[in-house]
Image 1 (cartoon, rainbow, N blue to C red):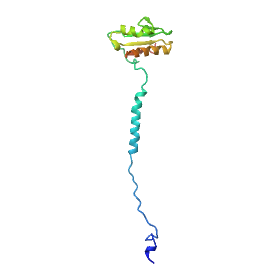
Image 2 (spheres, rainbow, N blue to C red):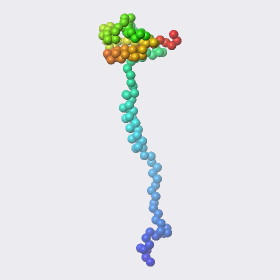
Image 3 (cartoon, one colour):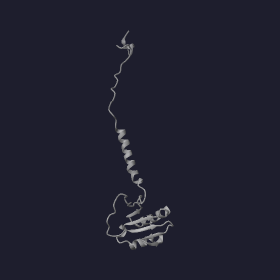
Image 4 (tube, rainbow, N blue to C red):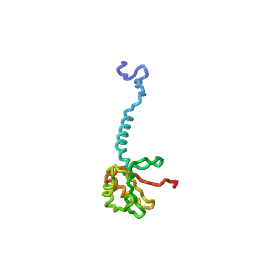
Length: 148
């Protein structure tokens, strides 16, 4: 008998041994980098959308009052929803025109908005929105300290 008739029979009793490839122990970081870049882009796009609201300068509770050359304008909303500029009652339609006429420094004028504790939240927000829409950016909300 010739060896050609016995295919695959060798020294190992007919079984061929294949060399196993070595296990690759390197870490593939490409998928991790891809995921991190996608997350970075998502957060970069979403971050500006998280800051919602009217941009105003709120007074700090622990800060001392800054010395000022001039008195800020005060707008008050009482419990009945009436709007006052300084001590004078003003109609909502005339509020911005009077603010522009009274402000010395233009749209950079410091404005304090005081809302009565029992006033309608919507009334105070309408006044604040109207002031902000007119271009006044230095708007502060005034509250009393807790210990009084």
